[in-house]
Length: 179
Image (cartoon, rainbow, N blue to C red):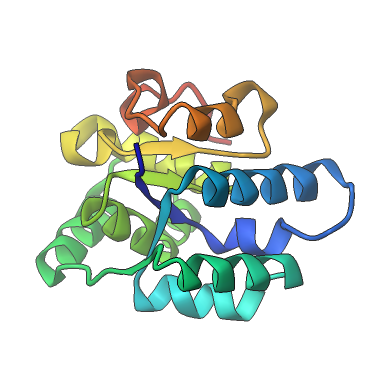
């Protein structure tokens, strides 16, 4: 079962060739994503972030994915952009700093909404903010968010098993704490 996954630039930046645990986890995740046959969704904003932050490994991975036609260019709907910005702006209990962080990464959610609803990122801060906001937005709460650097999340195994939309991985069920 091939799925289309939004891969944050944080993974592109961290997927170097060192044996540092985060670097290795990101590299293993991207390699497994390629091996299994999953696709990657990018809008213009995410593509620009990747180009700015990608490691040499991520550049090669992206080239391989493109050659196999597994890079999917998505166009996010203007109505969705306005809707999510409004959700962030009106979320009671968020600090200004949290609102700014969420607004900076709304493109990840937009891409997920027009693909298979799957995001992978190292940014647990933004994940927690979106999880908090999702309590008032079932559509946001349905997004699966996976951090490949967290061993307990079993990201590579999740890919091997088909990157299914599992309830425990959805933002609405996230057990992470906002700091």
